[in-house]
Image (tube, rainbow, N blue to C red; front, side, top):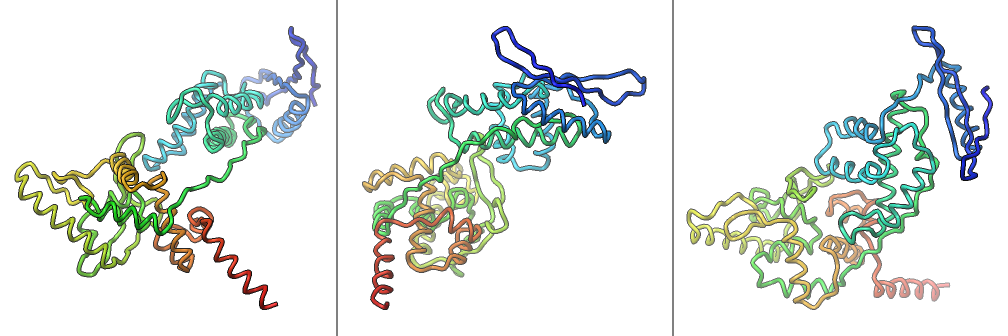
Length: 381
């Protein structure tokens, strides 16, 4: 096994280096590679691994591509056949790695480089979605590290590289996001304020737990007012600032839900109004079949829909929550009302595990229910 030599740099720092012989090529010329590490333990571990690979013939030498080349290779493989929102998510997650390490040879990146990337992201890596130069969330850092690690692993499988430096960096802990939710009275207050609104039916759908994309993707052909059902089978979502229409993200997203009297009446009123608007606007109206459309028949923009929600919320004097948190509110209220987890999951279009761990939240007043149960238990003893 080659010896590890200690190298002292000009500033006094030490590096640990070894040279390993590669299998001879067709020309029988001797080939060698030099590896340098900041820590002796890392050098020993890598030397043992490479010596084993060289002995078994698995080690074919190192690739000279940059980190940007590494990312390009990975994305070509990982995004083959993926949806646009997935493509955007992967590319966005890898942008910090491109910015900080893109010009480096992938094989020269070590654990310290990845650690520096992580620290930079946590302290000053934000470029959009907030104040530039501030730190990114632990979730964002974990996404970047996960994708970069996957890129290195693919290169190892393809025998381009022999070392994944991301493996040896501890990921930041991701705190579970706390979601603000509304009480039953607050949901009622919102609907009372929204009642005169032209899109009241859409706000009722929101307060019945549908996703924004599902509401905006609804067409009248999906609504059966006689059978009192609505079929969820497409969504209109915002991906990289572009509105895309696509199928639900999982099979559970495809579902048919029943309508009650209030929602049926709201949808009928909206349909009647759109028919009147079409006649009044004549040739200027373009009915594209969407339930949530403007006065000229065009589907509304997702961001406008979210902004309109907050305008109504402020008018009702309600605490600020995200539009999506209305979905959390509804699910929690169903749980408090005794609706079984598997039924809530089917209604919301996701798994029971996701429903219970992500969408169900206990409000302070719910603690009284627990206290009542405990009191009864204590009395029974």
